[in-house]
Structure formats: structure tokens, C-alpha cells
Length: 204
Ligand code: 5GP
Image 1: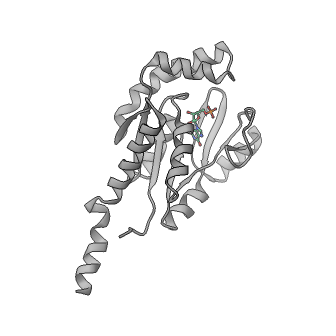
Image 2: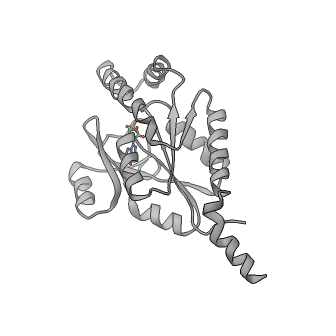
Image 3: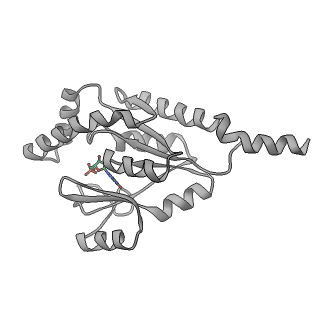
């Protein structure tokens, strides 16, 4: 049995922990989950594509989206804007599909205020040293930016208490399996299904 509305799932955690990789792997495995494409003023990295990784915007375009209330949440992160276009999120949920938002912790906090029923998952690095390795390994950031990202990461780790679940990203496949299990379990929650079961009882 399937409940009618999809779930809003927030996957957050320090930058570089592997949210994008984990989300990508999850998408391949679970077809009933959509992936929200964010808008950003950050410049595209090599290989990133418009409308796939992000909607790349100018500062003026992004500020217009804020003014027109087109974003479910937005945050300024390392001098760039990042935000979640609201329309796609609402449409996906009403279609009965789950949608994952891969966002940083400030944005996640704002989503929690608007969608307290969402599922909030915090992706953990095995250690801070490993986190630094991963950001450095990406090879796209300068030392200065890496230092800034690490200090943001330390603050971000303290926000874990706002989340329903904590998933360690020691290995992508394991993290994906844990998230998949969380989503499956959430679909079976009594309080989410109670109205459906009541209707069944009435038919009998
Ligand atoms: P990056 O520049 O590495 O792609 O992303 C930097 C940070 O911004 C990451 O932690 C990423 O999860 C976060 N981010 C991406 N899209 C959004 C969004 O729409 N809203 C918020 N609040 N953060 C986002």
C-alpha cells in the first residue's frame, strides 16, 4: 500500500561529506525519489550542467527569485547564494513522489520550520581529517577556500541535534542503503498511514 503524498527528505551535513555522491547513487537505485535541483550564484565546476547539478543564476536573478517568493529556502554560503525552487518540490510531493533536498544546514533549519513533517537526515563524515581529504581530493578548491570550508564544517557538525537520523558516510553504498532503509521505514509509520487504514476499515 502506498500513501498518497510523497515525502520531503532533507539530506544535509558538512560540505564535502559526499551528499551529492550519495544522492546520485540513491537516485540510481530508488526510482520513486526525485532530486531537487537548486539555484545558485556559484560558478559551475568543470562537468557541471545547467538544470542537472544546479540552475546557475546571477546575483540579480537570484535576488529576484527571493523577492518573488520562488524559493522554499535559501542561504548564503561562502559568498554565494544557494536556494531550493519551491514549485518543483510542491508538485513532486503532490504527485506522490518523494523528493530529496541536498542542502546545507542553515537551509535545512528553514525547511524544518515550513515542513516539520519532513524527514531530516544528517550525513556524517567518518572524521574531520577524512572530510578535509575529500575536499582536497576534489581538487577544485584553493587552500584558502578549503580552510574556510573546514571551519564551517566544524560549526555544521554541532547542528546534528536538529535531525531525525544520522548516517555515517563511510562508504557510499552503505550510506545509500541506510538512507533507503530510513525512507522505507518512514513510509510504514502508523501515524502516516492511519487515515488510509481508517478508510479500509470503513469499506469493510
Ligand atoms: P557546493 O558549492 O559544494 O555545490 O555546495 C555548497 C553547499 O551548499 C553544500 O553544503 C550544498 O549541500 C549546499 N546547497 C546546495 N544547494 C543548496 C540549496 O538549495 N540550499 C541550501 N541552503 N544549500 C544548498
